[in-house]
Length: 200
Image 1: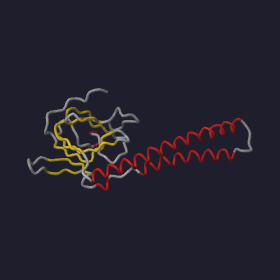
Image 2: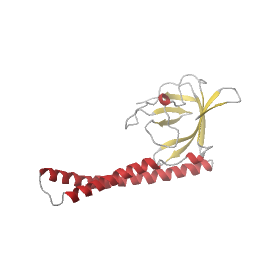
Image 3: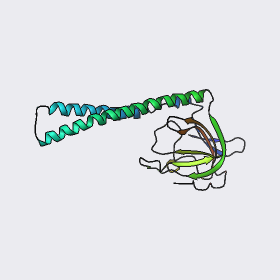
Image 4: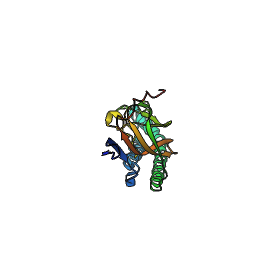
């Protein structure tokens, strides 16, 4: 993100821009690989346990073997789900990059209809997402998300605030049913304070 000077009116402008640098639009390969490694690790651990306890008997050994037999279907399900999500994410990101390169994105501009800052440690739910809208179109993102698009919440240095005027360019991600912000230009303190976001 960069702070620029808007030459029309001399105001400071905060900018996040993937349209100017589309090569930064890439999947989180490391994150996907980590989850795949966990699934493979579960299967390998189950195989090792079953192999080492093959000829042994006893209550502890039986319990260990039972755990190993549980780990096998769990590992297979984990790998299947992770593979599905990883392939979907890679395809979604490739489509987003193509849309940016072809100029196929939507842009809205104005003061915020409402605003709710995100929380810095949201856990595993979306309850701590940052939420705001401009021109009737809603956006949400959270600090715990792994994504190429803009997702920095206000308490962690995000550039959107209650009195911000924004120009936002975005692409619809049909795989994860969200709006991916690919460019965000923010003029600070240019609007009246936005009301709180509705709902939970």
